[in-house]
Every structure is written in C-alpha cells, then in structure tokens.
Length: 348
Image 1 (cartoon, helix red, strand yellow):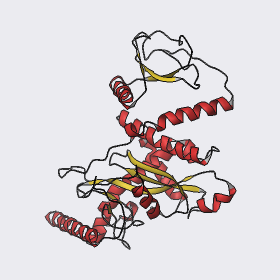
Image 2 (cartoon, helix red, strand yellow):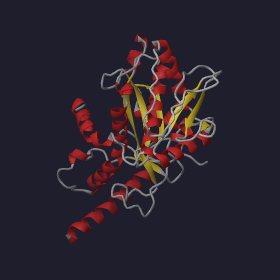
Image 3 (cartoon, one colour):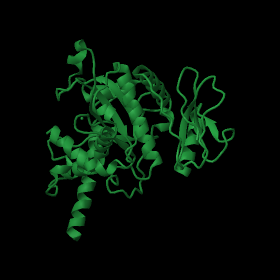
Image 4 (cartoon, helix red, strand yellow):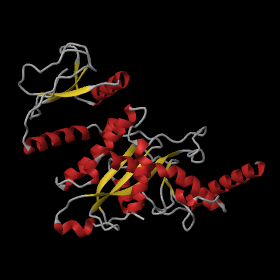
C-alpha cells in the first residue's frame, strides 16, 4: 500500500484502492465529489487509506498485498516543529470538508415510530451550548471565565436525532449567554438556518419562540427527576421534551469522551483551538456516518454520569423574540400529550 512520504507545500492528498496497481488504484482528493466517492468506497469496503504524495517525488513506497494484509511500517524522526506544521496542514484539509461532513437536517415525519420524537413533528433536532476549556492570554481570561469558573469558550452545538452535528459555532467567550451566541449564529451569512414551520428543541435557558421549542419553567425536567410519574400536562410535556432534547447532551458527551485534545486545552493560538473543535465535530460525524455501531457509545452513560458528578444551556428565522404563538403551540402539544397519556393509563 502507498505510504505517507511527508507533507510539505505543494503536496497532494490521495486515497488508495486495495489490490490495484498504483496507476489505477489511487484517486486524488481535490473536491467535494472526490471526497464523497472515497467515503462511498470506504463504506462499501470497510477500508480506505489516505496518504500524501510529496511534490517532486517520482515514486511512492508501496507494499504489495491485500488491503487488509500486513502493512510495511515506515518510521522517521520528526521534530516537534515539523509535527506541528503537518498537523496544521491536515487540520486545514479537514476543515474544508464541512459541506460534506455536516449533517443535512431533516424534519421528524408524521409517521415517526421513535418514541422519543413521536410528538415532535417537523422538529429538526436539538441544540444547546457547552463549555470547552481554552488557553487565552492573561488579559482575556476574565471574559472567557464561565459561570463554572473555567476559562472556556461557549460552543453552540446543533444536532440531528442521530447525534450528528448540523451546525457548530465555537469561539464565543465563556461569559457569553447562550441566547447571545444563538443570535449570532442566526445572523451569520453561513450561519444556522431554520425554515419556517421547522424548529429545534432547546432548554429553559432559551426563549420559547418561533423555531425553538423550550420546556415549561419551574417544573420537573431532567431525566433523573422522573422517579415518579408526571402529575400535570406541563410535567408530562417536560418529560417528553427532555427525553428527546437529551440527544444534544449525549452528542457533546460523546464528542468530549472521544477527543482528548478538547478535554484538555492545547497551547495553540486561540483561533487554532477553535479550528480543532470544528475538526473534531466533523470527524465525529464521519465516524457516525461510516460505522454502524459507534465503539465509544457503549461507554457514554458512564462518562455522562462522571460529568454530572463533577458539575452538580430562503425564508429563514433570524431572531429569537418571545412568541405568544409558540407558547400556544407548546400548550396545545402538552394538552394532546396529557389526554393521550391519561387514556392509556385508564385502559391499563
């Protein structure tokens, strides 16, 4: 198989096709279409190897044999500066794949059979903010200090029901309110886009308004609160809402569990730290797309419990103003849930 021969200015990125000659068994990754072709190949064959062709090299070391056979090991001493330079080039390449790797949102259909989402027709998923620790200059630390006293960036994440990211916006100071970050996401040229009639589930830190369905405040909400059945329609609505919106919390948990580089802040410049967060989200999506079973997910519940113990928020929508229409929509939905729930209990 073709191997990495170093990465410098002018190098090109390829992927290999096992058991083919070098002339016919490689493809250059130069645009979105070629990346999609490679992803389809990898999904079909459960294998793909990406490598770098050095500018000016006439040949690339090749190991004969099957794609899953033993591979020739090539080791080379590299300076920290060389490793860092190559890391940044790979990071830049991953960031260019955002159109391919970000999930395209699809509304929950009327015939949905997933119990978590049955009541939320036309919902696109869930969104929330999370803190990711960063290193910033001393003068900036007060702005980046979060309510949890961490020096962190407030990251807005939007996910689909399958726990793939639809939109990610890192970079805001940890002291910024979640609503402010969301308003910025809606106002950006390539920001979050929500068609009229569609919406995301949000927590009580956001306004209940067009495009964003929040739970009732001052009512039981979190999943671990439901040791006893709901007593009112508001509690029932919150229970259903929490079960569905929990997907974004689990998505963030899976992201942080998977990538040590965002669990602990690196010493790259702040802009590079932000790019690393984006790249981790994109590769998270790639893993979810290409693997039937995410190997990290079996450890997620334990990881989420540990986090809770440590810390005992076209025609598109462009604002998050409070809306009586969406308050009425939530009330009507809660009435329907309550009526259905009471009928089922009476039948039993």
